[in-house]
Image (cartoon, rainbow, N blue to C red; front, side, top):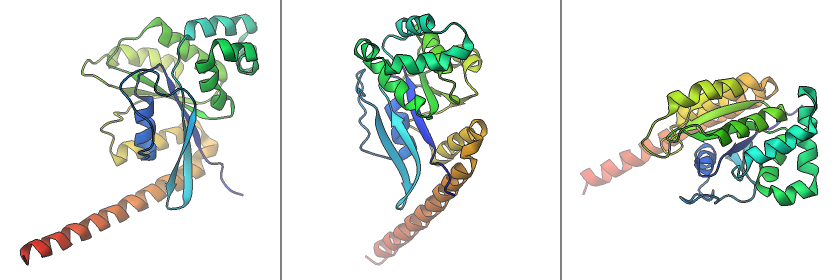
Length: 235
């Protein structure tokens, strides 16, 4: 039997670097990235492959726009904790909510389709009340989740973020989307292995394929450099 292909939804507030995280993990240059908020308006799926083999899927989602209002609507639909996942499903399925809160409905839909959550925050900005509402909404879905501390500017509020994130997420990792190296990407995948055990085999295969491809890239680079040196010395 084939292992299920891991599926991640990258979510967060607008302008937190979500699309940069997607681009870093998938190595896909077609991921649209811009400096102004709201670049991602529709959920888009990207597939990381080793050769022709798909290894995992990542969905880039729109940013939260009105998290506190959405949480209030959800709270009116759930009498207790057991009702919360169903309340989120009913919210997403309600056409009226789709018109009033299109971004939130769009980002929640793939999560309800069993995507693991990668919640991206900009650690160069302080924690805001809207962030807590976002995290609470994600917790209501009942899906496994990891928080990523990304920084888009030089200010550093990581120490403020960490105790808050630890209350909501299974794992909290630092991930600089613009400077992420190969070991950083592998560590992120292995982190999800801890909180989604059924993906363990698929993630192990993905990591092995990534490491094999990385070694092959290194060998190709060495060959190219050696050929250039021979040409330069023989010039």
